[in-house]
Image (spheres, rainbow, N blue to C red):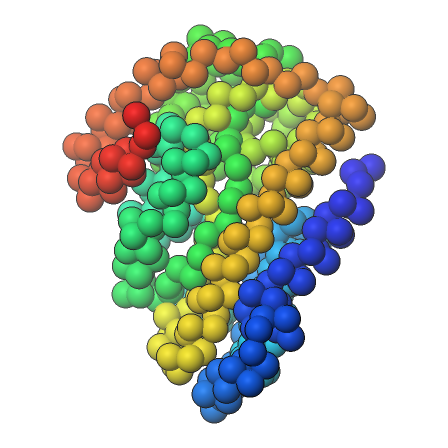
Length: 347
């Protein structure tokens, strides 16, 4: 069984860091913290936040620390109850609920948000980010903030982002070192046109299915592999024996809030929830890295997954050029964001 004691330790650390950064007892000036809470007082918000991860996942642990920090900083004027495990539906369902006023907040993938606001699709373009440093710099830039702000008309606003690592291919029988290795293979992808187009350009066959169906699909040969970050091996390492680090995408998770709720908050409350969300992003960078390391150790030691690192990245980058060409023609607004992201690359 996968061990969660390290993640529990992360929870304690994340809670302390978030509370300190967001005005807890160790934040510096108690009087200032109390004044901010008093200014934010007035209407009390009891908010529901949904996500589809388990309660021992790093996401849930960080969201719990975030909720506690917001409550502390706002002196109880903003209370967040978290609903994990997809109990409120799929990510698409949760965004629809936010738009309809049935839900207040959610943690969802940027790929899901692309179905509601096209600009988010820029994050799903293969190899739009050179590496982690490039990714972090873009996610903390005005490019991302402008996208977060642009969705108010769609009924929600972006508060902050969470690292979700790089996505690569993992397979049952065949290691993937070059695009030709994907030929004839059925690979599970998200329900995203960008992901489907990527698979087509690489020569594989995209098979859309829910995450909960992947294990059985791999086990029964319905699919030959899937693509995801390394933490998927926590669930699929028993049946998928090769994880190939082609690192084709780095798609962030995003915490979104109902635009209606946002506009009902005082400026002080808005500042509180935004600052605590930003602190959660910083805390989570370390929590996510620790989570990845623990999953990889378990996958190699207990599931005997082979980590394939001698991958021809240049061949993959060249093979996905048709995705860029199509985007430039069909979605010029999204392509413009892609150009901005590429403009921040080191090389």
